[in-house]
Image 1 (tube, rainbow, N blue to C red):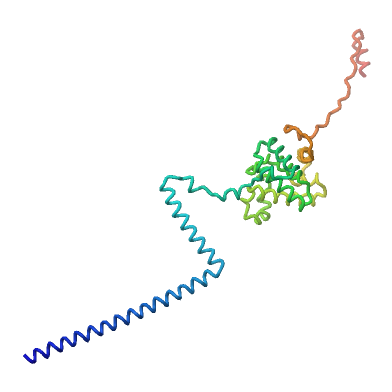
Image 2: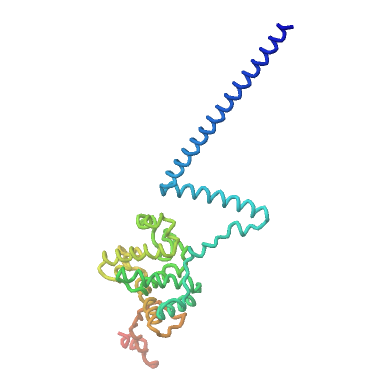
Length: 290
């Protein structure tokens, strides 16, 4: 019995020892894991702080977060059946090329309304183009009505116009020739942005005038007729349109259907010979005609 009691006590002591050992080991592991997690968390915070301190990294994080939020918003919106809300952009108005004519100086406002009626385009986009023409003309040393007249003749104020030879946009700039100029605006597709096309067109026009030595010859270069016998009346047509626009900007009254065609030269014909008298013999009529 004594031996059995001793054995039982030994088992109990062993069990208690193992329990205490296991408890100590568990507490130790728990403390170590807590300390490790704390170190990992602290290191993560330091890395995040350093990363966010760099502008490019912060921008990337913000972009990813914004895209995720927008994606979640679009999913919820599509689920509700409102498709327009997904594609609507409140900031789209900032990209629109438009200016209220009422906010323009009097001469620019008058010309804006006249162009709008003459070419059947909305006054707000025309107002932005007129305003830009006045601004860039001061830097380029050109008359703003000349810039606007070229737009009128080239594209009738259609920013998406394209000619058979590939000239594009408001001022019909050959993008394949002047692609280096459009690189400043992000690439050749900027030819369809009204303001970018206007600015590139003005630069091309200045270079043409400087190369040709005069405005009229510069217009021949601009239209690609420098090596031809005739520009087809292009320069005269542009200058006639400019004269109409200048009159409007100066406060004059010009009908919206006024012609910008240059006057044609009138051919002077020699008078026909006088007919011979009726009672004259045929031989005598011939002599009279001689």
